[in-house]
Length: 470
Image 1 (cartoon, helix red, strand yellow):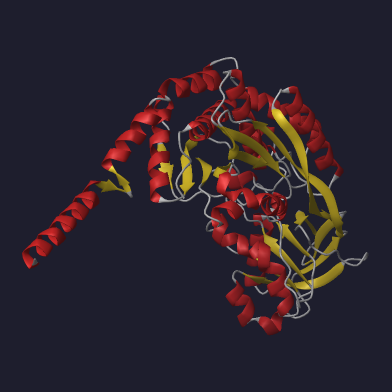
Image 2: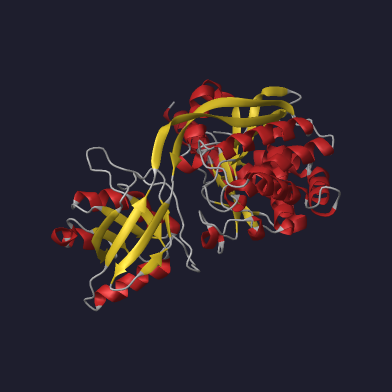
C-alpha cells in the first residue's frame, strides 16, 4: 500500500511539474497554440482595417473631422456653453454617421469660470506676467492682491522658510522632472502655501518646453485650509523671479483674478455603439474625453483621442463588420476635473461589470504611435500580445505596462482589463493645457495610424470566442 501511495504521489507530482513547464504566463502551451490560431485568423480583417484607415477612402478622415469640430466649437471647459455646443454637435454627427444607440447620458460637472485675470510685477520694475488661473481657484478682491514674493523650488524649502512666507505670494520655481512628479506643485501648491500663511500662490507651469506660455490645469484645495488664489505663470517668469531674489532683490506682484465657482452644471457623456451580433450585452469600450480647458482648441487633449475612438466605429461600419460583442464609443465629460463624468458613468453601469470585456481610452495625444499599454491578468496579456501581432504591417506590435486613463481607471481598479494608446509624447507637454493646444499640433498621418491600431484591437477583442480573462 505504501509503495502504491508513493507511486501515486510521484505520478501526481510529475503531472503537476509537466503542467508548470508547459505553462507560459498562466496559459498552457496547448491553450496558447489555440489562442494564436484564433487571433491569426483575423490577419486579413486587420489588413483591411489598416488599409482603409491609412491608405484607403478613410485616409485623413479623423483628422478632417477633428479640424472641423475644433475650428467650429473651440475649447470646451466643463460647464461652459461651448461644451454644450460640442456635445450637441457630436450627438448629431454620430447620428449622421449611422451609428447605433446614439445617446446622451446625464451627469453633473463642475462649472468654474476664470473671469478676467492679470498679474504685474511692480517692483523692482514693472512687467506684465502671463498667467492662467488654475481650475477651482478662488478669485481675488476686485482691487487685487499686492504682496511681496517668496520664491521656493520645493515644498520642503517652503516648510523650512514658513515664517518668511506669511503674508506673501509664494512663487514655485520647481524644475520639470516628469508630469507625474511635477504636477503635484500645481495640484497642491495653493494649499501648502496657505498652510504657512501665504496670500496667494503662483506656480511655474508644468511644461517640458516653454515659449513664454502659461499652462493651466485643475488644483485641489484641502478641507480646513484657507482657500487662496492660485495661477500658473510661465517658466521664463518663474526663473526670472528666482534669479532676482538670489541677488537679494525685493519683488512685489499685483495679482487680480475674477474667478468664480458656479454650482455644478448639467452635462452629458456622449455614447454610440455597434451592437454585437452574438453577445450584445458584453461590451468593449473605446473612448476619449470631449471636454478640454478654456484655452487653445483642445485638439490634442483630448480631441485626437475622442476622434480616433469615433473613427474606430466608422471603420468597422464601413467594412461591414459586426463583432460578436458590442463596441461602445464613450466621449467622456468632466475629465479635466478628475474624471467626474466617467465616475458617474461607472456608478450607473457597474452592475454590468461582469459583461465589461475591455475598457480603452486614448488621452495622451495622437502623435506617432508606439503601441498599446495594457493592464490585466497574465492570461489576458498573452491574448493581447497576440492581437498586437496583427499590426505587423505597420510595424507597431509592442504591448507595454500599464494602461493609463483617468476615465477608465474606475473599471480597471475593479478588475476589468484596460488598454491605452502609447505614442511619442516628447512634445505633448509643450502644448498641454495651453493656448498652444491647437489643430496645428495634429498630424493626419499619425492620426490614421492611431485609428488603425485602435480599431484592430477593439474589433478583434470584441469578436474573440471568449472574453478576456480577469
